[in-house]
Image (cartoon, rainbow, N blue to C red; front, top):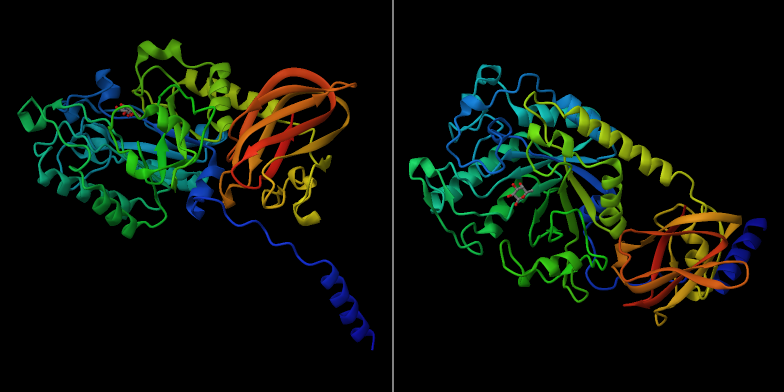
Amino acid sequence: MKNAILILALTVFSCSQPAIPPPSAYGPVPSPKQLAWHNMEMNAFIHFTTNTFTDKEWGYGDESPDVFNPTALDADQWVKVLSEAGFQGIILTCKHHDGFCLWPSNYTKHSVKHSPWKNGLGNVVQELHDACNKYGVKFGIYLSPWDRNHEAYGTPAYIEYYRNQLRELFEQYNPVFEMWFDGANGGDGYYGGKREKRQIDGKSYYDWPATLEMVRTIDPGVLFFSDGGPDIRWCGNERGSAGETNWNLINRDTIYAGKPNITGLLNSGDENGTFWVPAEVDVSIRPGWFYHASEDSLVKSPDDLFEIYLTSVGRGSNLLLNVPPDRRGLLHENDVEALREWKKKIDETFAENLALKAKVKASQVRGKSKLYAGSCVTDANPETYWATDDNTTSGSIEINLNGTQEVKYILMQEYITLGQRVKTFSVEYYDGTSWKEAANGTTIGYKRILRIDPVQTNKIRVNIEQSLACPLISNVEIF
Ligand code: FUL
């Protein structure tokens, strides 16, 4: 009898409180592996090859393997330092434009195997792969499509060679979280002694679809980066700056590696894009990509790096920061120090979230359901979000701080699993008598961090002014 009453009570309750279905996805959405990539936020790049020893940025391709001889290479040091600085993955230039291979490839003599380092028995790719496993950091591969050493570059035989090397790398050093295809194809080079200029048609020469399919068959978890994707796009500059407007969308058909005049489009993405292809911000901690002793005093300061953090991660992109090992095969003391201080600055700036568990009042809540309440933005659960009804594409949430506090930063995140929506927003603070604007902007996406002139306030209001569909905000943090 008791059970029957309980069942009846539950039935009545659930009938009067029908579950409000979640909004449908709007536009292109990230794949599960792209979502996991967004969550990584910061990865490191490692540029290392004969250039490190010849003091060049682009080796011509005629460098003798004899020059490659690090005296104290320690991939453990690289990964320990980078992981402590907050990087989740590391991408290594297994082969840069000069063609020298950091692993003993079976397909060329232009590799570590023919260098004096460890009497030809060394393997940088293996050492980094092992160290990444040890520290729980993901491993990524850069293999330059342009090869200034190879005699067959420019002919179909080179494509065969390039694919053989990809197969070799992916079979031995998987899983690979990201494969980086560089769009640079400069022209002149050594090319097996011919020393000439070779032009290729960037659109057709590499037959990328077939190459990517081959790699995916070996390692289905990999994401491909190139100027135009298909999984991750270039942000259009090497200064460390994603667009203030940054859509994760583009139309893949309109761009390809090396296509002129697309850097602006790559930087901002395309609100009407038909594919989810987020931007990655690649930048070096030094002026060059490779180590040069003359740049030891030019390492970016912790403050410079913090600005880059705000214009990359803070604009919804992932940061890919290059930290090149020196001739010893170690990350230089100056770089290590800058990274350590930078990490400290990030941790201190974002140490206390004043909005955590704060009370939130929303202008409207989807179906008046608790599932989509304003408080979902302060519950520290990335899977819950504030949502409005389907036909409401603007709205605001008021976050009540615990008394008057100094506010310097506001961090916001959309629930991108169901697409990117917000087109314009503003943030206001209450100064005791009225609301004043603290900031405004366009897109939010995976994450947006706004630095404002410090204010004293007890309430912050986020206004979503225009959204492509009902806005879904999963997180607001205030510092
Ligand atoms: C560019 C290359 O030419 C640079 O040397 C460097 O590797 C950078 C990340 O990409 O296109």
